[in-house]
Image (cartoon, rainbow, N blue to C red; front, side, top):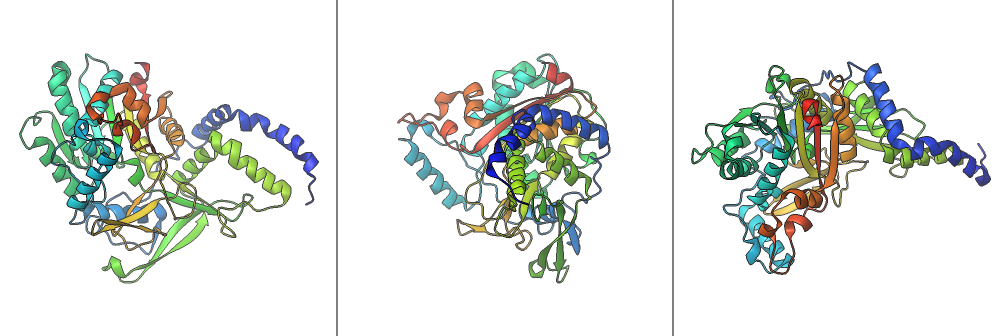
Length: 461
């Protein structure tokens, strides 16, 4: 095909409606998706945390879940916990400034020999206090305070939230219940020790060892309003990988073919196999991702211009296009909306990750820690259980998926904000202010965001 650049204004004019009114297109198309694919959120894939050996062929998300959560060799069930714990709060007001703060963190990382200290851990107890203040705003004051945390890490956030309620909101604390849904038996015990070591919160706190993406974790439908906390959970929810040769080609879902002894995961070899998209969760996420305003205004425009110019758009020379989709996140949201229709979700995570070498849009950072040093890997197909595999969160897509999962239960009221804005609204900023005026609670973790989304009766608060 031959194309004259003088035709560009005509092409752009034809695209102007859907490109620059992306939110309207997104809402209309998601409505169509809800009607046309009302059974799309009934996945048949295996759950997280299966104890079975790796099958010869698994969808990408199932392979990643085995690598992270397998009860025998999963990354989060290894002997050395990747989640670190600080024995005491950092003395922020005694630190000279940013450099002193960073040096203090480095000393603790070296001493603890862990790969990760959560923001809740670093900014204890003030980070948890801010989350507690936020959740109190979102639930009716005279009703029981029902809190469910998915993936409680070290238990630090739960401890600080409950301490805050106990010390400053006795009436709400007396009606509070706090449940941690934890897939890792090792971390479940860590959380029990952290929150219950002095018996203070024994009457209102419990840990339920479950995979939160399964129905058994949530039980029967419960109409009582609740808060669902997802802190640094979305990044470790397994994703699916889709690929296509060009912008005109059909998307393919990715399966992982494993060879070698099934009893020895360290000796297995893994290769990608692509097939036409058939998995319902992949379909749903793919449609929602392609309907994001940013994708409408950029990716679709670029693809159309590529077609008009006779070019091939690709993420790498000759490699085609690759996209990573948060299918396990959609599955989890569906479980939440089905079991707890009246809810508020408070989620925080990384909105972008630095120095990612795995190809594709939304690709994961794959890292392992040895002798206090972090090693990044160019592929996610490392021996299972040897590396953390974590993804950036597209928070606008998260909001769309929340609405998609809430089909039949009404509209979702959602807000996305950077962590700095969330903390300005809910935290006591004097507690983490250093002598120079630098405040790491506001300035560190600048690549993180919060999502607060309400559904059912909670959306009317």
